[in-house]
Image (tube, rainbow, N blue to C red; front, top):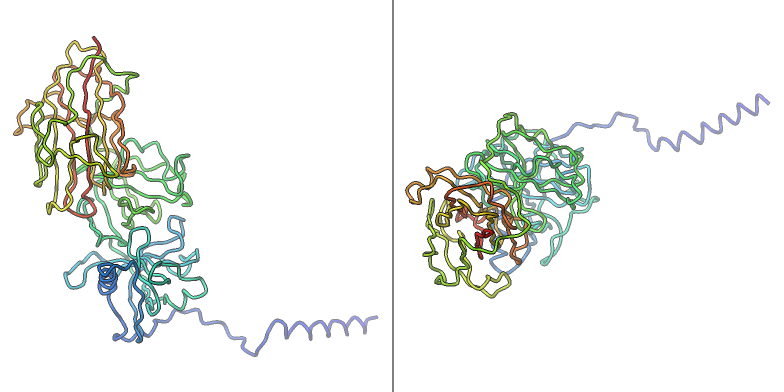
Length: 478
């Protein structure tokens, strides 16, 4: 029996060894990353790739296929990571590690569409990469310029089986310096790049929210990030698959850095963080405005103190009469009368402000009611309607003052607060319908009240939205 047992052991070992080792190479695998050898003559620039795409678009195409016969590469640095789940099946790369932006070599970024996850294991933030472009396609993905496969009609993802032959790792892992920029100065050239916003905070109405864990968050959560210097805002986009989606947004103010881009529907600008460490709101004192918030009334009064539906105004001319103060704080655009029967139709004739094509670095315009005396007026309320057309991160505020003297020279010297109960159309709202403000209760104010509709935008593409206003009414109960 002992001999049989020894024999079986020998047979088992003899069979097992060839199955485990197919050759005589028992050396330890070389896991060191080696710098790819890319001839300088094969390298092109992000600028050249963006220009190829723009030329294709100008020619009526939606994508451009790179058909170069010679090898063609770009080199850049990874600025996104899917480790926290806020990015998915994509790499965002930019051509520089810092924010230098000379005219001949601008700081630009590109998205790479890849049909695989856990890319952070190979391409961590700061990793230098080389992308072989031959046979790839340039197009738009969620409103930003991207690289993938595809044809003359559609951009598709690079498949998991091929991306390692296309995206090559360099040996450098750089420390990235984001571009410190004001929200209103962002342009399409900043898309797919790392930015930093200073002295900002989460809007006060979002403070009780998680990043993307609310029942109303579908695919992504959007939270308002606003500047304490200018009041200008943009949206922070967080995936509902992010591992930090259920955390409460930070409560103070400070800095945030992230990738600048567009939302899924290409309707508005967003900033996307890699992780919560990208937000440093370490100053507890916030910059929230003064508010008048008496809530919403169940109904409005039957007697009127002020009303205007702008029907007596002249199209494409500044709003005048009815006691309105039409004041331009910055730029060249004023509130004008407008009438349209298109998809985004006006309500007959409306008041409109559009900063597109203004050429102005900043457009700020106020439309202010005459003084409305609330003394002895029971159940006073405000009503109005607003609509927008691709607000593009521009915004409209409804403000009030109890101490403005009615002169344009003293508008900025007066104390202005926010009528926070009023609903104003948002950047993320559909551009077709009109939105009711609700019956904004004014009963916690007294004396002479001025109500201002303040537009903030610019002539820049990313900040040049259109807002319309109509049926402004202040009522009270007899």
